[in-house]
Image (cartoon, rainbow over the protein chains, first blue to last red):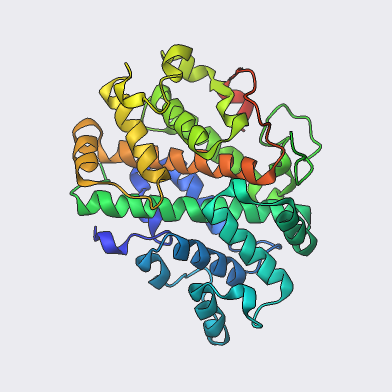
Length: 161
Length: 174
């Protein structure tokens, strides 16, 4: 197992030894990319926002098979990676609200404000807001686990038995 | 207590996940309930270790609801309330076992910013746990962290500690 290959996107194949709970988490993860609330492209931009906050180069470079970004969105990706979404005209007000929510969530969910939640709720509805919160929890959890696994493998741990 | 940002599902099944705001997202609800059940039923470490990392996560995320819960299965496994209280800032000098302290250290490695594991921690984990057990604890951590951060984000979190509630695993599983 090459440590550098471990990211939130490849995580599941590195956790198979954990059995049924790992398979269950993988199923939840796959389902995030096909639901009626947040487009796969926007969810991928959320993942990149969290990866930027973790300063995780491997995560930022990894192509997402669940959400291949269309060529036209390369510029949007660059803006997300630069942290300039708030001032960019490439995003709608709703997208800016969702990405700002993501950024605050990534720093500390306790810092989220009622106004931020209300803005996202206006865009996505209440179920959509709950979905976004769950999805961000999944994305952040997987980035964290990938980082820990990467270090464990670099330091000689074998996770397959 | 601040008001929750989302109303609860409106169901009264007795399952705290289904009856919470998470019940409003049918696309993820069953997977989250199943995940919670499998973590408690099929993990490769003891209920005591699971409860210790759950409590460590709850403390770090500051989820007042999660901190007030104790799972019966861990109590039956020997994690008394006095021992559960040792999962605090002074855990390293507590009477928790070496294995239990390592589980806390793994949780801290995951919960840190940035997350990551040092070489000494890796060596200590390898001595005490199999690779599959380490993977199992990481999956449990992801599950606990996901749900506690969701609870915090949805809002309505009490500011003061709540009375302890002993929960059977069956109340939060399918």
